[in-house]
Length: 222
Image (tube, rainbow, N blue to C red; front, side, top):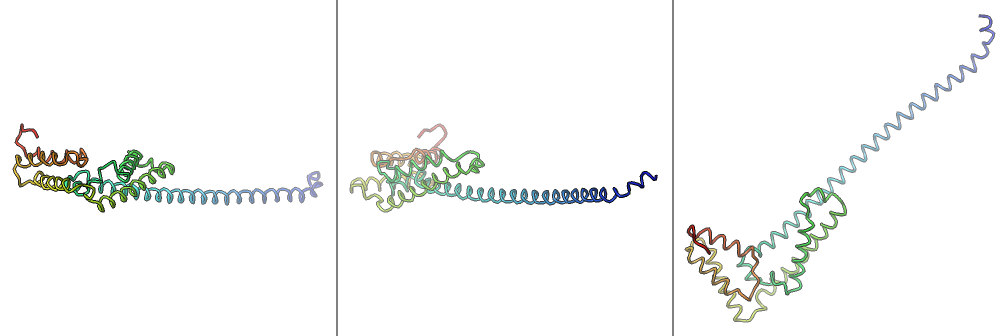
């Protein structure tokens, strides 16, 4: 005991060392706690920002897809309606630069539209598709304005008479009140009038032929 007490003077230095070590441990632990809190805050902030970017991207994707659909619907108004096309024949005349430009832009936009729209979350893929749709919309607007301005003005008086006869015949062919035989005959005459004048899209022919065929008796062919 006396030996231990004889080293009483060491208690104070050792106590100081232990006290300092304990303080450093406490400080380290507090720093770690604060670092964890900060890392959690940064992670949460990054997740929130990523969610915001993703939501913004999806909103932009939805907007571009809707624009694509809108232009397609406007084009279908010509492609599927022979009567409208007769009024504005330039819309299928690929000899016209504006018409050719819009048809090429349509093909490119359609080709770049992915089956899985999540692919458009890739910024590079989306940018290429967005720009293609923009070109499609712009070129279609230009072609449509010019087609509506010119109407049938590029045709001779005789050709315009043929177009008018074809328009009336198409109306008969599409009239559900007409007999199947009348509709069939009108359609054939209309195609004869249009031959060599305007390019009739296959979709327009198929739609009208399908309506007429549905009215024919079973076993009859158009």
